[in-house]
Length: 185
Length: 165
Image 1 (cartoon, each protein chain N blue to C red):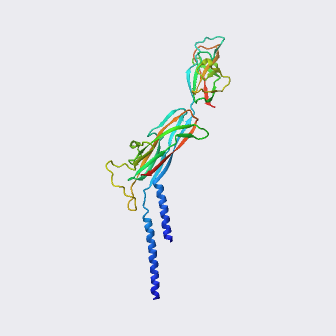
Image 2 (tube, one colour; image 1 turned 90 degrees about the vertical axis):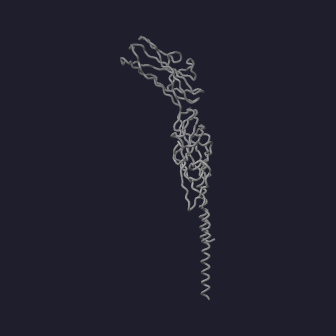
Image 3 (tube, helix red, strand yellow; image 1 turned 120 degrees about the vertical axis):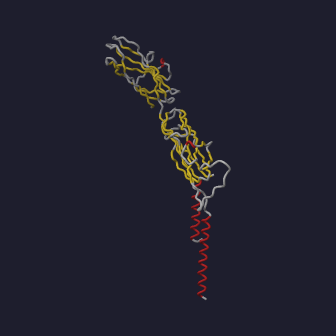
């Protein structure tokens, strides 16, 4: 009789631990969510050396001074890229002089870092497919990433270029920071 | 809450936070330019003393009045103060005989292109101010002795240097 009671207690403990283990697995299973999205800056934008009073100075799409970003992510998804830039480049050091500038950007989403494939963005925000898909009716929604499905990653390229207007200003180094926000749609 | 459950919840929190960063990213790009001062000199007229005959006299070309004076236009930053230094005296060489003659230069300047309003420089270097268009005008005169002057063409460089103060 005593032997039987001991056996029952041990059985209950085993069952309790087993149930706890099942709870933990349930929580982890719910955590499959998003694809990764990474970007690297390949090149800053540099107008190089200009004379004071030079007036309008332009870096065109494809020029050596343009800025370049590479975005790597799920080829089945779309991304939204937003560019935020100040109105002026400001001088390093004690001077109130500024250089007004305007920027544009373009993207290449056919798998190659090739300006000939670039599409010029209109405005400061653009939405595009990480990899350009064939035109036509929309297909089935992309399969969410999971342990059973790892989507193929591709790299799209962002090119930043534009103009500045250099008046009769103090000589020196002028800089400005441009923010790019990249998110899945 | 047992240990296994705590660990599981911790994994959940860490994983959720990590996915939030991956799906939405901010990146920075720097735009830069290096500006150098613009200051240019344009020769509008060379010095022209015409034809001279050897004599005991000195030839003097007044930069404020003579039409043969050289003329240089300086273009730079609006209303900027600049410093002008110039050759006070140089040796000119006869291209045929290689004989030399000493030429002394005099300079006058003004913010306008009116030669008669220009003022003779009394120091070297001289400090002047560019006008509201970023311009300044220099007239170059000279003086040399005609005594024992060998006929022929003489060559030499008059050097002007300008820089911002």
